[in-house]
Amino acid sequence: MRKLRRYGQVFYGLALLLAACVLLIACGPSDAQIEELLAAPAVEKVTVHWLVVGEGTEPWMQSAENDFVDRFNKSQDEIKLEMELGMGGGGLSDRIEAGNIPDLVGPLSPNFGSRFNEIWADIGSLAVEGSGLDAFDPTTVDAWRREGKLIGVPFGFWPAVLYYNKDIFDRAGLAYPPHQYGQDYAAGGAWSLDKVAEIGPMMTIDKSGRTARTTSFDPNTAMQWGFMIEGNDLRAAVAIFGSPSIQDASGEVRLPQAWRDASHWIHSAIWEGKFFPNGLALESTRGDPFGKGQAAMFYVSTSYLCCEVKFNYDIAAVPSFNGKITSRRDHSGFGIPQASRYQEAAMKVIMALTSDPGMIAAFRIVPARTEMRKDLTKLLSSQQPYVDWQVLVDSMNYPDDPPYSEFLPRASGAFDRFSTFAESLLTKEDLAVDDELDKLEVDLQEIIGQ
Figure 1: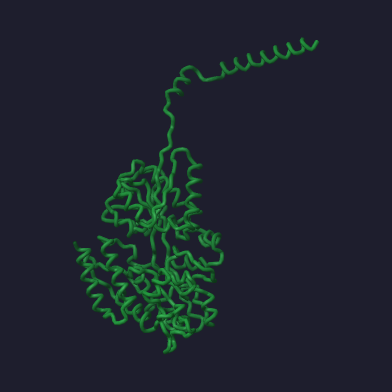
Figure 2: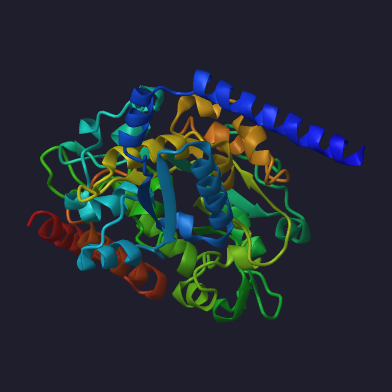
């Protein structure tokens, strides 16, 4: 009886198998379809090599970039994105020299990009589906036009604001700077650089605890400073005083009044007011007294991520100069080298990068895509809820014009000369400022006019 039951199970299984085979033959692909499938080439992903430079190499940015690469690669089956870090600009320079040029480079500034102007593809000539720039703020696109071509796609820009150390203000018993533009200082008077020069010395202290308002104050032993401005090339620093443009309509170098105002104000703040860190102080703090809790106020773009030591800080409105407020814009974007074999694929990656909320939040940037600016304060607060990001949004109403990012021929040589002039301001108390500015103008004309 057991044998009959086992044989019955075998015959039943064979019957099911036979029925399945008949169904497969009846419903399966035809011979022609099978041949077509066999003849079709296997789809291979294009590998796009992304060289991360500039701000993107900072440790706090890398996690956001790695996360983006992972999400992008999982989101589609056409492109494999690979990321490599190039610290500073050396990574790009080394690649160019070795002939090993990546497919995508950034985030970088237009001024940095123009140092390698000849390597970039003209973005305007890349016809890639879905890559139209009409969704981008035109001012951010224009920042990337260099010598007749569009050398990059804008990611966005960082407006300059005033970072301030709340703990230092509290210890000095001073009111915080206003967060709303156009608002007076709480203790009275317009919020201006004159007000900064008034309260800055009260928060500048030497190792003996004396402030810069006392005659016995020793700046060589200062442990804390009242105010500082980002930009050792000075061009960035000048923006708070007005236009940093150094060329007239004919291309001749003409340093505007803003340069002279900035140079005299900074030199006076260092050597007379003694509330602005000199060269020695900047060197001892590796250029960042504020990040080390040793400066009360810092005019800097929001690309700056505070801080090396822990203290309470926030951002406030930029102080005015001669009644005008200027929030410098530091533009950032991505370039595609002409040598890339996969320019269209790289462009698709850029379109994804510039619309990714995670990247925008991590970089604390005003996105170039206007639709991404909705609820920007909420997005930025998701990572740093203790910062008043409305100040960043409001700063968009006070742009530098013409912009700090304005094209400068032979930028490398010009920036080197800016730096030597800034070093003189920071290190020479007896500097004849106007004479040095005259020399700077002549030298820049010789560099740029070659």
